[in-house]
Length: 355
Ligand code: NAD
Image (cartoon, rainbow, N blue to C red):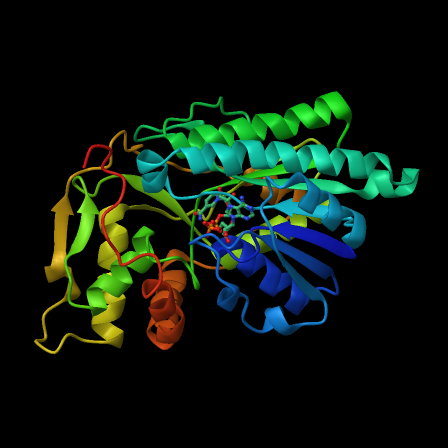
């Protein structure tokens, strides 16, 4: 089912902008991009999609009910892909209020407005409408050395961020079961790739490395994440919104588990090849172990076999190719990250709780 009009929330963020770029480049969809443009939103991340006649942008807060009602009434979406969120665990430790507001109250507001709009559609439009909620594997808590999360894993969120995402997932399912809103959900692992805000591990490491600064690794670097390339994730989101079964959840993972230390070392290896240090030493020399994140989840891993089985999705990017492309992208796109760094965030440590 090709969807004609898609309302994307958070489309100026890291994953949302990758999705919008794909929707404009690879489909014929009209895209209505709703984003508050917090510190994490950046219209420059939309690249050429921003100027397409099939893309319209509204700077609005998903908590603003009248603004959402106007957008639904005028754009008349056939699907909503909801990515707008406060997304950084460290920031949720320092200031959880924005997370409660956007992730919980904002998702509630969007669900309520979407449900009223959906009730006003004719029967065929109601059947094909979808509300796609984009969430995280962090709602499942933390794994030990073995095992993986899948769609049947019980919720056990442990950070303020993951608690608000878990709350929003529950709200979305409740609106489906109580009001019949046709929803689909995805829970994915850590994304990486171009246009990633430099507070997150991979872009932070790249930019600190080339600036000659220390490369902070939390704790002993043994925490494990599964890494999913953002373009693979965007492909999965498009499949799920078009073909996913109503009421179902799909886990999305990159099948690329790495310890944080391995990730930082992989970045250093790529930089050693692409931009050797003038003294001939490896960028690994800049690695420094720093105080761990409070309550740092040990390991996340995703079993994405339901998505593979039902919708035929597989990641196209290996971690080795994805990380090499990502490092090369940051080296080639200094204008983008310099403007981000000249703004609200200079690379300082966040999320120590009591600092
Ligand atoms: P991001 O922080 O890069 O982007 C979030 C976007 O939402 C920004 O453009 C911001 O301006 C916008 N936004 C924030 N509050 C808003 C509000 N009240 N109203 C309207 N817009 C608002 O986040 P991301 O990494 O692109 O994540 C997108 C979604 O995917 C989030 O829901 C996140 O929880 C989820 N997710 C992300 C990852 C990851 O690795 N990045 C992993 C799993 C799930």
